[in-house]
Length: 134
Image (tube, rainbow, N blue to C red):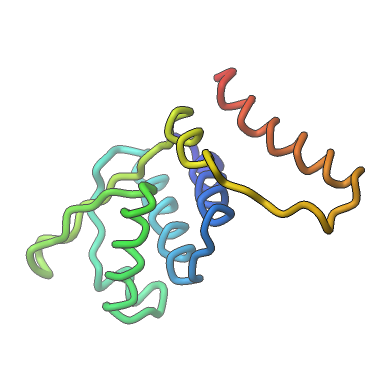
């Protein structure tokens, strides 16, 4: 798991289905927290601290966290109290999961010029091919 790998995963997920800024902010925050802890999973992080740092309400953070888990970007165990914080794990998509998520996904390219369309398709396939080589 790498910082850039996580963020690329986020943007792939957002391309499949738009996500609110609160979810993007929370995911970026959790990636940064994970990175500070040398990617040791799971890691603990107080919901109150997340709310304060991101300037988001508790309910917004709870909803964003739930949606990120539904997208299979994170998993978490909710903390029992202020003194027992939530535990988070950053999830890495496998090639199989990525392929399954993109099955049936269509993107309207009719407004893009043919030259631009070819470049878009080539760059998209390069991202997936580079994952397979690793």
